[in-house]
Length: 365
Image 1 (spheres, rainbow, N blue to C red):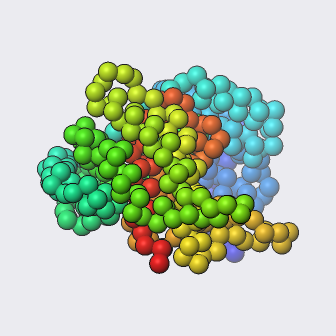
Image 2 (image 1 turned 30 degrees about the vertical axis):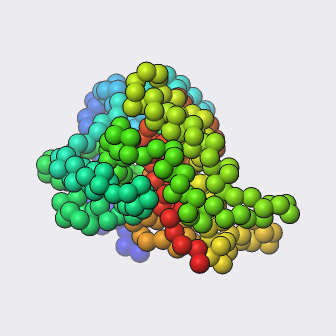
């Protein structure tokens, strides 16, 4: 292994003694952190990495004094990590407490990237409007075709949406935890936004109703009965209460005569969609259990189930993005009560409805 020291001039190495670096940090500069990380690579072989991590944490104190509201969580997160690697656990706990307090009190703004899709929305909406109810739901269930019809939509990307501007951005999950920097805003984000826009327009025009969707689902495999504790049950029976509540809220969305509240329907439908995915795999002679490290059988988690379902890549990506941590993580957020009232919105409800239509429209024979 070639020492990294060979690639640095002696004059730089001379700057790595602790008093000089400490004095240098006192005179804060934006380049301090990158310089210290370079020194960390050099001094790691000499067992000084803990001291360098201490200095990185000290530098974060200076940096936080020069950070606006947008960046404070990211900088506190780094500070906690540096204290941890420096074995400064008391300071680590203090920083984590402050981080938790800020996450609970502060609401960070959400930035939407708008893309000129009005023409495409109108074209797809026209097809939905001219279709019979059963064909209408089949068309929605095969929404990947919407992106094949337009090369413009197929090539939607973050770069296009920002008109080739370069930006820095930080992503947070629902609990204001920072998502790793290698997470990218994907094409699927824009495709889902387009689907939500079209379905909302169809709802407002009363093209999607509880009566027509019940009629459609009655013709699908989820109407079939499956055995539970010696009795037979249909998925449709357990779905209907949640669906009726969903369309009740859609009605309020259309008429505006009452405030919408999607809590009951989203909480009801989310776990059932996971159960439908599991049974869909079973009907197709798939395996939904595995053996853990203790050689005990256990059910495969949702992420693993989605990888096993027999659907096309776009549909798999859509369901994964809606339900799991690779995207909106709706299933986990519902199961662990991370959702607040503002998260129970029409967009989330539409995403779940499309997931249901995709799975239910498949042939299990």
